[in-house]
Figure 1 (cartoon, one colour):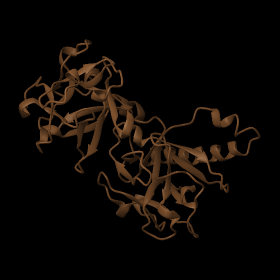
Figure 2 (cartoon, rainbow, N blue to C red):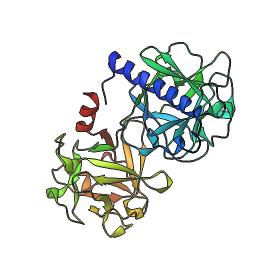
Figure 3 (spheres, one colour):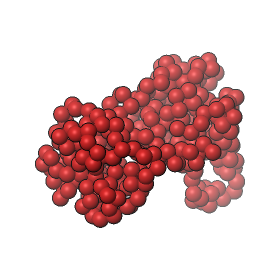
Length: 332
């Protein structure tokens, strides 16, 4: 997690507000529609300042709730701003994964209205102003006058806490910052053993076993690049080898081994990372619908991974921790 010191928060907040200003100014430039919209967009994580957690959606579905989650490099936690057709300095906040907009449910003006993702159809609930809140920024939907704020419900610190619309009362959960260099790499720590997912012997070969190893904090074979797959799933490519976490032989059987293989887009290389509300996730293989765990629930160094029907054991739980090296670079 990057530093959330007042100085750094102020810089990140002003960057978010500045990004809004630049987006709106570009919309006023002749030719913006045909030229500037084709320019590379700036994709960011948006963090709740009080918790340091990322705004994220669990799927691409219309009406999916927006929640705060630990920043683990998920493509579902990436957003970009674009000038709203409503004008008045407002923007749409678009999720990169789903292509849908942050919005207040039914454009309701009342406190407690849920924040969800919708189809960006020009409703006032999808139009936001970004207001400077000192060290941070407020996200203010164009649903009510005077303006209300987006907040993490009850200023909760928990993973999975939903967002809602509420009065702007300087509550901690209503202030947000951006991270313009989003986390896209993660280390996977097993809840049972405390060891990290890595490659046996640092092998570059297809079929090399994916095993648990003592966490070094810097070993590239213990870092995984998070990518996007269909249906809200992710791929996990090993940073050292460039190969993807897979199930050997695309097997659907209990006990099939976790291996690395060339990233070819098969469903045996796609994983649903499902938050369990405790800072841990299960990793469900899309091809088999089975969970990644440690063979025989072992705590041993070098123990193999395998897939198994959900057993409720802690070896099937994983903490997704942002890359230490990357976070250090962001915080410098």
